[in-house]
Every structure is written in structure tokens, then in C-alpha cells.
Image (cartoon, rainbow, N blue to C red; front, top):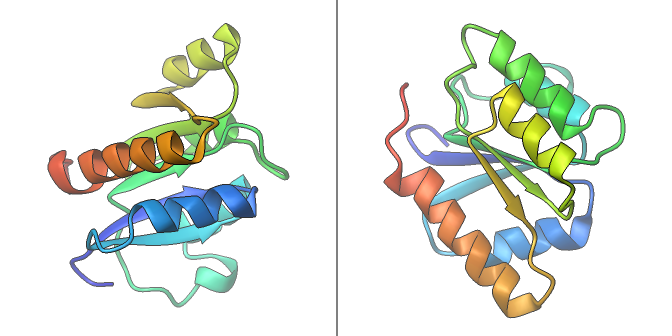
Length: 142
């Protein structure tokens, strides 16, 4: 995965994760899927099953808001507090339309807040657009 564009996807719903892979198929983006916030931090800090992964940061982090162990907001808070990780773009990808979740996400440092579309076609199109934008078009600091 060296020099490739990597999305770190923290998503506890396997169907939503599968749709993410489907939406970005053939886009030259690698997706690393983790099932909760604790695994996301393991990936970022080379812990657990990621202790021997290649060095480097993901191009962007896609976080579900409500996950077991650590939720998306806890992950945003920790990433933004870390000098080495704080510039990684973070997209909250959630089913929550609650104003408090939206406000807290931005207050903690999320770069975008996307409510997951309900229909298959709209979900695929939305994921394709945000995945390509954040991983391939957006210029992020190294």
C-alpha cells in the first residue's frame, strides 16, 4: 500500500462497509476497514493486528459516529490532540441527523459530516463522490 491513497474506514455495520468497498471499486483507493474506534486507534498507532503494518498515515479517516468500544467522537478527539495525526482529514459518516452530533463533530475537529443515504443508489453515489474527493482530489498535508 506504499504511496497509495488509503481511507481508514471505522464502521461497525458490515453491510455499510461492503457498500463502501463497492462504491470505490476501481478508483485506486485502498480501504482499511476496522469495526470500531478502538481498532481505528490501533491502526493509527500500530497496535494490535496493525503492529506490523507499513508506515504512514491514511489519506482520510471515515468514521461512523456510533460504534462499540470507542465512538467516532472519541476518535476525533484523540486524533486532533495528537501532533502527528491532527492534520489527517476526518469525515463523519453517520445515520444521525441530530444537531448535537453535527455540532460536536465539527467542534472536535471533523472536516465533514455526511449523513448516510438510505437508498442503495444514493449511498453508492455519495460514497463515490466523497471518497474520490477526500482521497484523490483534496490536497492534504503529509
